[in-house]
Image 1 (cartoon, rainbow, N blue to C red):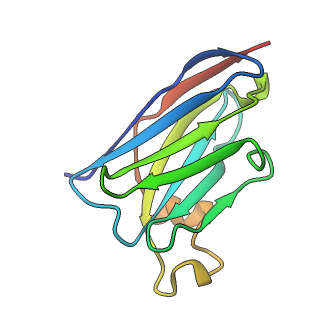
Image 2: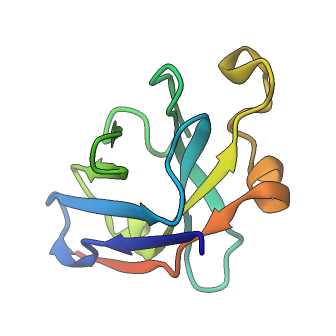
Image 3: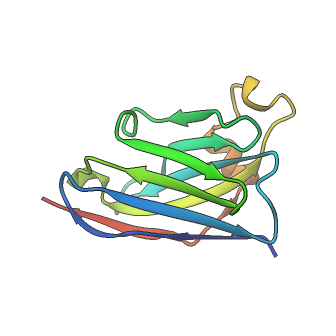
Length: 133
């Protein structure tokens, strides 16, 4: 059974840091894109970062650039999201998802698209991140 489990969420003050983990079981990350998404109350789900297990290439949304970093540990089948300089507007439930890479991998302009993950992705249950002001 394919399963993704997020952990590491919690309550942190503005300016603080958290590291989220996404551990996979039932499959390996070979040839997958692993994305991080978040959804705040009353808002649509937002893709914030993505990493390719094939070549380590990353993508970040404008809201994540410069503050968040995603890395993959293939030996542990785990992806991490390091979040620094957190802001109250980062408060949300954070999800990881894994979707097969397209044939041309990261040369495809859609490898990190929200739609690809919506159509093909396996999702975790989410972890709450709350940033207090």
